Amino acid sequence: MADLRGGIDLGGTKIQTVVVEANGTLRGEARQPTPTAGGPADVARAMEDALREAAAAAAARPDELRGVGVGSPGDANGDTGVVSGARNLPGWDGSFALGDELSRALGTPVRIGNDVQVAVEGEYALGAGKGSNSLLGVWWGTGVGGGIVLDGKPWLGRGAAGEIGHMVVKRNGARCPCGRRGCMEAYAGRAAMEARARDEHEKGTKTDLFKIMEKRGKDRLTSSVWEHALREGDALTESLLRRAVRYLGTGIASACNLLDVETVVIGGGLGVRFGDRFMDHLATEMHKHLFVADPPMMKVAELGDLGGAIGASLLVRD
Amino acid sequence: MADLRGGIDLGGTKIQTVVVEANGTLRGEARQPTPTAGGPADVARAMEDALREAAAAAAARPDELRGVGVGSPGDANGDTGVVSGARNLPGWDGSFALGDELSRALGTPVRIGNDVQVAVEGEYALGAGKGSNSLLGVWWGTGVGGGIVLDGKPWLGRGAAGEIGHMVVKRNGARCPCGRRGCMEAYAGRAAMEARARDEHEKGTKTDLFKIMEKRGKDRLTSSVWEHALREGDALTESLLRRAVRYLGTGIASACNLLDVETVVIGGGLGVRFGDRFMDHLATEMHKHLFVADPPMMKVAELGDLGGAIGASLLVRD
Image (cartoon, rainbow over all chains, first blue to last red):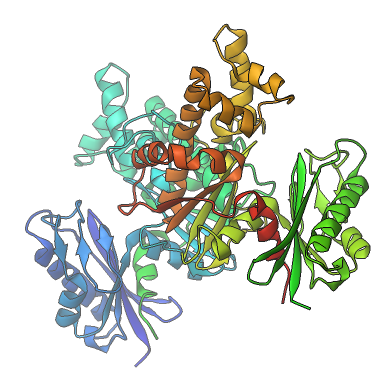
């Protein structure tokens, strides 16, 4: 029996699971939609199912795995395995002992971490950050999350570090989904971009964004909707993406002036789709504000859609 | 003979030296004005004189010291002892082997560090940061410098970390003395505040700032000029200081969202003078933008005017 580990990336729309070898080599994977009704116990059951499926694909039983790591949204406590305030999951405003619940169901130790932080650590260990001494991960998706690795070790602060999306890039600026003003996420997050697109559309700006959304059977502007609209040359799409990149550049430059990291990795749903295409634009915007003489290396996340789950598998201790 | 060490804080207006015991206990100190003409060699000679004077006050000869540490402006290379581009010192646009020069003159090893970083490390080891696991130092003076201690160790990045004054708090905002736009220093640095005061004064805003400056025989608005004007109830002074504090709060909150440090220490010429008085205002401004649930402890630097020199003495290796 090989030394196999499980990884689960718990997202607001899907649950992605993997079974990998210790070095990250993929042996099986599975995906399920995240339940939209019920509560934490229902979400945990869907996670269990998806992990069992990935294990089956790897010809293993869950209780044969050395352990399972979970990247979770909300406030994920790595010591207790409790996840609190995961507000994009159904009925999860309070606390739920996700680690214990899954461990009992799967018959193997389960460790919990922050979703973005484990994805960044995955890129550090196995992907775009390999070989760097220090790394800032910028996860550009519905929100803008971040993760930090300094001198080869994750920097979590008192547990809440990495919130680059809530660095202020414009004092008294736009209202952020978090309620504060001028955060980078208020300009660059997918949710904020969608709100802006709706405003512009209602004010009469021509755009195919919402037509494409409906045609693809979505109820919001997913990353793939943005990608299709961009490919079709939709002007509002291009302009809102370029605006997002300007603010990303400003915020990332600020973070680099503070931390002087060697490498910046752009990940997340929008980051992986648009990182390469907008990298020159991003670098140009950053350089307007970079105080450090030596710009960081800029890379797009390499582990793709499975990166979050593979990163989570690294939580499993040898 | 006690185990004595020297420390030199090389500033744009004065050279402060100390001789201390290993635990930071002061045994002697001296101060000299920084030469305003000549070149690096002249500055080094003034540093040597001031250190000899501090040693004499401690009843020691320089060559009896275990070593001397220097906190230097510009690009201070700790490995080579070379200081480059110290533009607020006379004729110091290029590079000068300050460490070697002083070591030869004083007959003891000399180590060079960044002025703000050594002051922050001094507060961490012996002052306001004592007992913290992680600390952000914000040095509010002519510019706004910073220093970071994470998990008990200084974080220097690739050598240029800590530039909190050049985090962007307002994209497309005010021009900073560094030439970029919207940096925190463009609003909060003493030099930027002075430029703004001159503008307002020329536009007809009533203020006693420049009268006080002349009466005190200064050619610029030093920290003490600001302090006197504030004490006399000068409205422009109060308004520009409060404006500076607003932007400091925004930038510090941004840094805390990224790093989630335990403690923030406010130092520097303006920080030490005004930190206590404006601490509530600063906290209020920070809390508007703090994403982390647990605010950091806020403290004013405790080592006072000698903090930079005492911090520099910690560069001396046992």
